[in-house]
Length: 570
Picture 1 (spheres, one colour):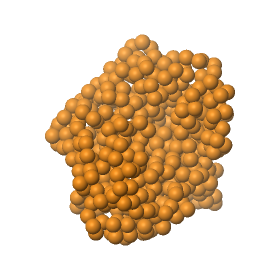
Picture 2 (cartoon, rainbow, N blue to C red):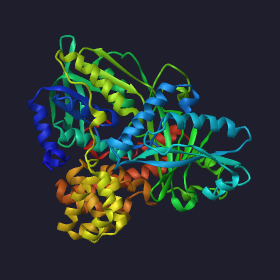
Picture 3 (cartoon, rainbow, N blue to C red):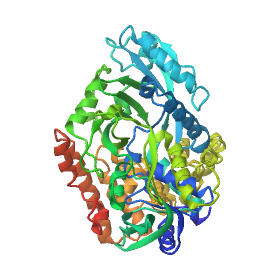
């Protein structure tokens, strides 16, 4: 593997230097799933490509989803068959070709509570299952009797549940998938840099000719010249549009979605659970040794960088989950909470739950393409459409998109590596469960972690404060996956911040000690990183005790951003 295939401190420095000197064909603003997907799409067409992200890859919406790759049952209910079919096609690509190491099928049941539910729900899921037949998950949705439902879902409330419909969806580690998209783009030559904020646009006559950025690690500002710029900033779309001048052809409205993380042993079920609420759908999703319960769907007009979960959000989710559970959950069962913002196209409805998840592309100024809306599952189609629009302005022939045939790094040879996991365990002396854990997170790149452990056996030990992760994973995240700060490591490369009861406070010092030599941190910087992380956790906990969004947002803003040392904007 060449150094270009890593997102390391050295490659970030080299990429910044090249971005200063070279004119690009396409510069992408935003390191979420659509921006990272756009960079991959553009670079695999043979274009000179750059990607700048103000914080970290997937730091916004793309690390705070329900972790599902799905067609969207509620869009089928709205008769949006085209969107559902498109999403089911993309689900198949992710599960079978593009990222089989990061995405996998997961069984669900839809509990039936009223006599009419069997016909109504059964028909809807039956159509959904038929549309997705042969598309990455087992088909043949089937009805479960009350007895069979109880066997599958022993924690279900027997006085309420009359039966269930069983079917499959896809699941993905969203933060790792987005980072792997950026890493794959870098492996093909894209210049990808995080912690680099756009602070202005370069203009030549009536067109955009690039951007001016600030490296938030050094504080240095410099221009990046590009023939075409793609704004893929999600809920920040309007802010970037104002920076270039004027309003765009559409507006983006932020909808807040909150999720709770619960220990796996608190709900006894062989499958995930999905049901309707008065506002949307409620999911109880298996997530390793935990369950994820979500989500809410409410307007958010406050700080986009730090959407805050309030006490009312948590109570809402617990109340609806408990309507199906024999043994009710309490706030003491919640080990993690996260909130994200959906970038919905505004102007179609007053209620965010009814706004479109379809995307739109526009070019409000020559040299600038804006992509907004959509859903995580269809990121690749959104990226393709954005690059298709941008290349029209290059005034030369450009190859069509090929990303439906470009596996992410770690995907090539994954099936064979999975089949050989017992042999790998014998060869390395590690438990089979550890090999499986690495394969599910890194695919065939897990050989790099195994080589690292062979060279430094102490890295093969679990983290004392988060034993589901190895010390090698913290090391690798800093050396090869672009992590620059503790929040990047504990919240996105690993999910310690939502998977342990102390939200990663104990892990902060332990992980900081491992990565400090790799990131060049002094003792003072280590203390600063740990303190920033602890203050972030404290502010999140305080927000979750507040009654509503306004007070929760005020509490959450007490969390400093370690990158703000050189930039006051959040």
